[in-house]
Image (cartoon, rainbow, N blue to C red; front, side, top):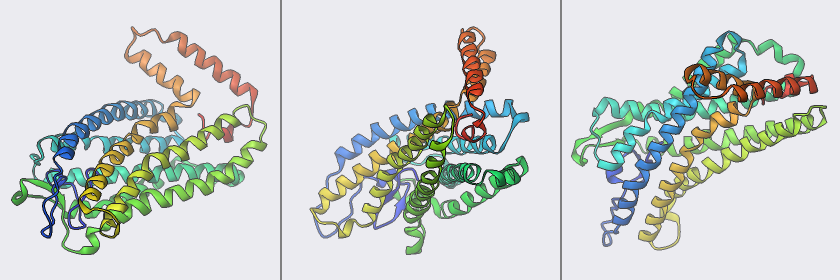
Length: 355
């Protein structure tokens, strides 16, 4: 997904072509300002997202591995969501370097591997969010049937299916992305078929936004009324969390997908062609980097909001960094957890949101 560009309606990772404008029927369009902007803006944001995303998701993985003996389906989904985001952010340093030098210096294998891994991480992250949404829907709407499938074995099998689906969707990027030495060592998605040229745009919009958003809206719209009827001290907090999940997903990914689709339709849009090209490329750049920061929020939205999980995080930090005074915070978390548990025994439902 990084650096999606269209040159003759083609999606590509080619940052050296990012600001090129090909139009033989008119004078060249000066995009030098965009080039200077992207050369500074893209690597800066990519590095920040890499650092924050790596630290947050690594912490989630470490906590869940440490407490693997207490694993349930929710923990398995959280673990795989964190792995997906880690796979996603680990490709960003390559593209940060690429956006600066505007040459791919890591070879053809890494060009294909980085492109495919980037998309695999992106789709698996989205798909695991959908799985967690559907899991919560079944737990709350079909409570009596939930125990039949919410086993560790089912969670592992479901995770394998999601990873295989994500890999399958990303397979064209492994196959068609390659280094083109004739264009200044560019790493670009360059299939011969027109259908495959538009593949990433439509899969990003349909599988990466429309279907996941529809599932979230439908499931959570049925969950919220039931939660509001429960006698739980956590219900308002859970409802706020649900709204935050849906709104955050839409705000972070919708602008980027809309920008990609507008670039696909750019020949049919009114206005000066050069100005339109500048605005669309700037829009893709800004919305893309903004969307990537969502992987930094996933640990906060899905894991760190829970008192039990935060207590585990603080305990792990205390063990790894013993000189940091965290004992008071851990005690507070423990007392809060006990108080919350005593206040409501319908926590099995709400705990699928706040652990």
